[in-house]
Length: 521
Image (cartoon, rainbow, N blue to C red; front, side):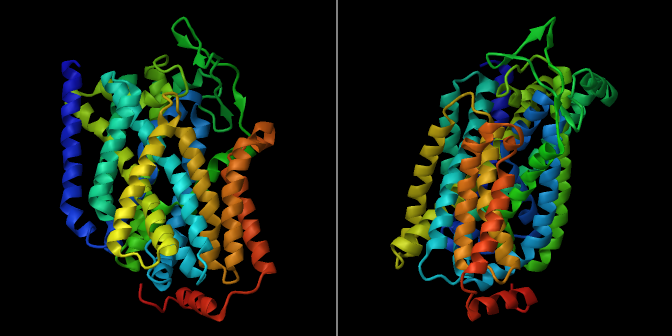
């Protein structure tokens, strides 16, 4: 390890020491009871709510996955995805946040998403709770694995260490931190990490554009690549055994690929995922006052628009500055690391690299914590042992965290894993399983318990069916699995609800009371 690498490592260690301090500081309060551990006692302020929601949502995918897509195939895929995410973020904060905050209090003061759905339909046999908790365990384990991939790639690229060893090291750190501090510590550290992520992105894009000779030079270079700078076209790298060909020191691209309106809708469908994202929805439930959500929405939107826009442009400028540095789709996700270590002093680059690690930790601890709560609170205490004491729930959550971390590490062991692909599948899973149900639960009084079960099962199953089977047919079927799965889930909820017995009078009264806003939230 040379002098520059040591300086980078020192900066990263200092940053992570600050993250650990936050965990230690909030550990006593977090371990007071399960509500404090899993939801922070509904005490988040508007800034922490907004910034922690977005940091836990975007993760290392924002700093590595999205720039990697733009670097590899140009503007269209990355830009339409970013636009869809920005639109989805806005409407999620606008129409879901207030009513969910209010309804979660009415629904037995629910502190987890499965508990909210179960209480919303006043079920005695906890099928909704069981099914929703099971899907959370499945998709968050996949999600956590994407974060571990980020850790492995980051340390491997920086220090030349074996990918698998660095992957395990990152997973152990995430596990220990999550065990220590719980939801409140995670939210506070996410707030700090959101600031670091935005700062890192902004600094790198400014320095990179200056080094490239200005925006004009970057644009001119991008125009030379067929389809690279088009909204309705896409660049197609010419590959040989998965590696892009290079001729005369330049990467080889084929003719621009088509980008139809259906493909645009497919990319923008990422925005639908927000309605079912537990890590974001829990922040709505955890804010201290419903009236503060409007301010949180404004903060969140400013952060999201700037961060997504800058992340996409980093991929574009990176292709200009380092056209042959990354010749595989997986390797392209290291372009942010390449730019950071090339243009910044080592100690500053270390703090920027800490931004990637921070983003990864902010997401993976959210994913693991929510998954652990799904099992310990909703399956163990909610179904298996209903008289379980709070200490037993806390112990079970820690055992679950360990198991989920091990499974996530196994999934992430493949060094050629593409962060964007892993995230897209888990995102589709949550969006289709919980998104339609969340919207109908909050805004359609006629939604029945049977309809809720049908919507979750059909949406989650369709993600697997479309991804593994139908998309292989190609053509119009090659769209992002979230879009057809979301639509199918919504149809199932409506049809099954209409053909089954209407909700009870008590459920309808709950709905009307929440809609009227005449309850304390």
